[in-house]
Length: 266
Length: 282
Image 1 (cartoon, chains in turn brown, blue):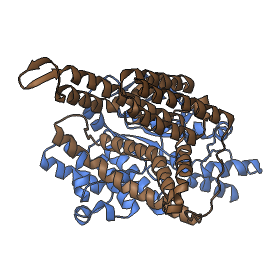
Image 2 (cartoon, rainbow over the protein chains, first blue to last red):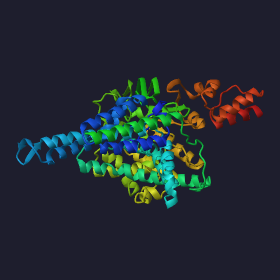
Image 3 (cartoon, rainbow over the protein chains, first blue to last red):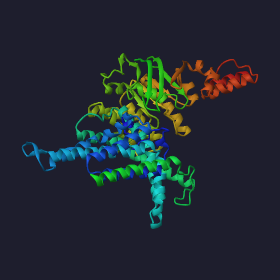
Image 4 (cartoon, rainbow over the protein chains, first blue to last red):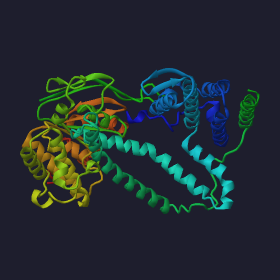
């Protein structure tokens, strides 16, 4: 059950999208999110949707996998939809008691819903097709110009790498502890909310202890190998822009131009 | 009391690119009061198999029948199974969480819904069963104990549920030689006094050869051998191909035989080997 969380997970593959330079993918994802907020009507979403669709097809990630990543945020989307439907004033379509549904409310809700879904799937595609290490290397490279004004780019990237690296370790640890407590008859699935919260104590205490132990061991191991933070470190796999990265960049610029044109023309 | 495993198959990450078959069509039975060892290389499916025995994992196919009850049936009460089959994980001390030893050991029995009086009896009994002094240790924090003591407390936490089958996944991993011997003596003592089924996973062939009535050998998710220690450990070549070693006593006996000494018996324990060698040297 705990392994089913796909948000932020990598889907191993060897597609064109997988092979793109992480820097290009990160920039494209950021700009894609910005583009989603530039769009002001539904026709713009058609362009954004088509672009995302193309990425999904090229990446060869199964749709069921992408869909699973969307599941945990469905509640947030539903909540946003409801708020929009009921809170926006305008031409009243249905009214019951103090609640009323307006035409504007429905339109805004649909608009926000599509935007959210595209936003989540768009950013999921980045993590699904980029190894965590590639992701942090990319972030470090993109942040390094800011080193001049004192931003600890390497340290930030290192912290992210470690955090990402240890997500599966901690999930595994959680799984182990849950099983050990279940073997002692613990029940996490029934009872009211207070009981369930109390049932978490036997998991959280050992998990915290494990997390601190792992952190200590890691720090010790890094020091033993003379890790020195932001020295002039070189990389085993240096990032290099290839032809396909340029092609992807160009294609993405075309997409951005379409979005901006659509905004100006409509 | 018996355990019957029929055509058990388990697949991890089914339908994903990293899908792997952890257990492949495994069948065996374990009779009342047996002490069974499971050996196999890392990743051979031992731990996955153990987790099926008390319903923590559900198989893709196959059945596990414990005491006449099919535990793979979704209608079977999980609490009943966990009361019957006590599973001690590797490094069980990582499951400790309570403020005092007594309260931690009481976690299992209180989940079973026993009365306060029964719980305090069973807690005292199981702490004594693992060789600790109840009055001395009951109010200590489990986190300030030594490694060996922590492990005993964690094992007491499982024993407190009075399991009829005790499953131990490498109970001596990471312990010093003294604590290692103490824990195994304790397990032996429990087996004698409670006369329950014990299933022991271990990488230490000396322990397996000395303690177990029967040995199961796992390789790549399949059960490849099932027999008495004497039967299993004489298949030296096959074991070595699977990356498994022989018990030291048998290893030295075989080498002496190869070197020309007239030893015909296959010694499994150090005592047997010592006796055999001494008799030839007289």
